[in-house]
Image 1 (cartoon, rainbow, N blue to C red):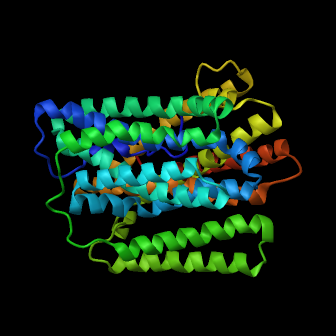
Image 2: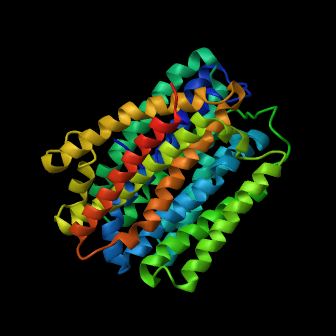
Image 3: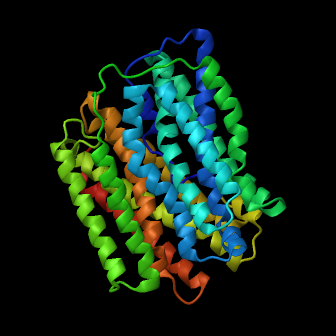
Length: 423
């Protein structure tokens, strides 16, 4: 299973974790279980929602733009706050922030499941994104804190396998729930996962932090990142309805650009930047992030539209649409491209991670990996936002345009790698 929201450098975040916890050998299995369950909440939610989008659109009588916001409200909050969420966990305690993330994510999931309309659903999805910005980095860091360097390899292997299994089963499970119960049921899976996760975290998870963490947090940077991305996304989505010359669109895009410029200036002057700009002085680091931007943008756009194409244009059930993401699907029309896609990602992600690590100093690998994970999320965020402007006469024709654009982005990622990365 390839997820457009997967974190390409997640394993390296675990390896680079600083600060240990007073974790007994007996409790290490519980720590790993809590981290796996916490990650599963986020990964299952990310992978199942796309399959449910056509049904949500029809049931709530809304538009494609609203469906873009259902995805992007979550991704916007998660990507803008992911780096500061990890820094806050290092500063105030990973167990504490992990618990807050679980509770926030769970309550927001319940709100999604009972949302009376599209506005409430989008608002709850935004709160889910805030919870994920705490939950995801804490899930990774608590593994790194509990296991020493010799044990981390095995722990990462178990965590990676479980996360991949959860992300792979998500679309099929989500499709089945949509077909046999309701789209609302996909959000109510999370409370069921949260119960054992909270029990383990409260009883077995030791507190940990980074003793070298800076005393202050880059809150101004986080606010500027949220505002900049929010302005750009709002303008791009609104452009499909209002046109590029509308003052609302122009104003939103300009505000987003100015706030993004403010973020760069703030990171340059901050004593504790969440995104140290000095890292981009490395040609390889800049190149691998450009590669990530193009590649994960292509994945995000293609995977957003695919369920609409399968369900609305070709008459697939939600279950069958979810099964297309799995390698044992019998629909050979889509199996071939998915195999090629999976093979391409399999031979790309490992060297991508290695390049990120090798392009920076050893003490900077954690923040560099976090930045690359954020770039992957932002890529999907921006491409999904612009998709509405690519809509043409029919869904099938629109799919051709979108998939061609995704292919062009994938080729651009290869060009970026060839021009900037030196082995």
